[in-house]
Image (cartoon, rainbow, N blue to C red; front, side, top):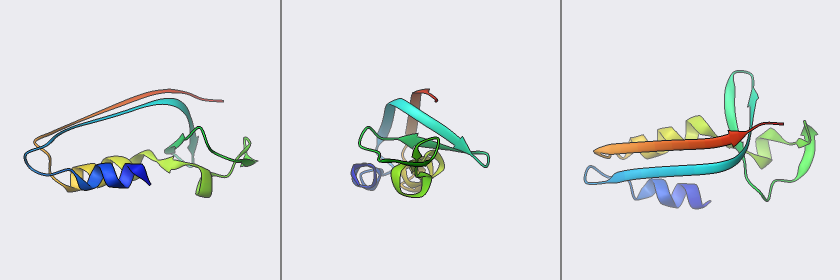
Length: 79
């Protein structure tokens, strides 16, 4: 996915800015982003395992590269 390609560019010389505007859901205390191409299936019409991207996985993968700064903006609504 494109998020993985972006995260691979993270390094100690990087200023990383991640911006997402769209829908999000919360399941079992975890936040998930719902990409525009998500299929409608189970929980609230979304199959969380196949259709969403975990916010924690995004932040962890970018921070793993140890950028000098990382900014995350999540402009999300829920349904």
